[in-house]
Length: 205
Image 1 (cartoon, rainbow, N blue to C red):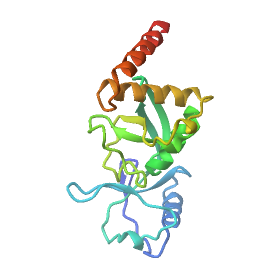
Image 2: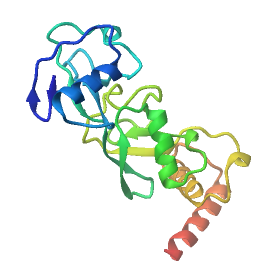
Image 3: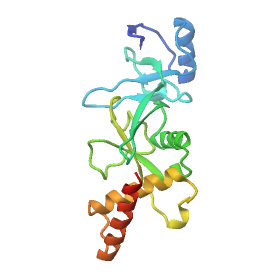
Image 4: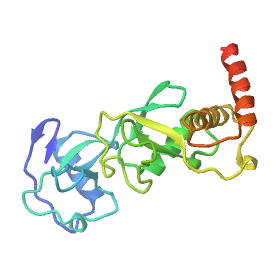
């Protein structure tokens, strides 16, 4: 087991839950707290890293004698770029799935319908979304990655909360960029009207 840059050899019963193993580590080392968990580091070329779930047993993860695990904080700062190019840094639970992270981000940014948004990794193809059911590590996202928050699901205009300024702001920017990039073809008269509106927006700022 590795924790705080120290390596310690410990013996566990495979039938122990991850929560019980975490508690045992905390009691034996006197370090960590409720925000600490067990992380299984990646094996280059074979597996991605992942956090072990508290309600699973160690045997479930097929841990064998000599397996290296990391005991560390789950919370870490995450950098997120919005479509207005601003960057927000938020403290998040690294063990959460992408869907749970987006919900947390939505709450912190006062976005009314966070389930309609998802995350992408800057530098990867724009159409490549992270798997919502997996954590960042399981998606192969490095710790220093910059993530982009985008709206993924579009239902109808009726589902847009007009009283939610942040949602309207992000939705407008994403639609604007999709049109100017040619991803959403428009008629000439529509393009002219949109360009006129954009000129008014830019003049205000």
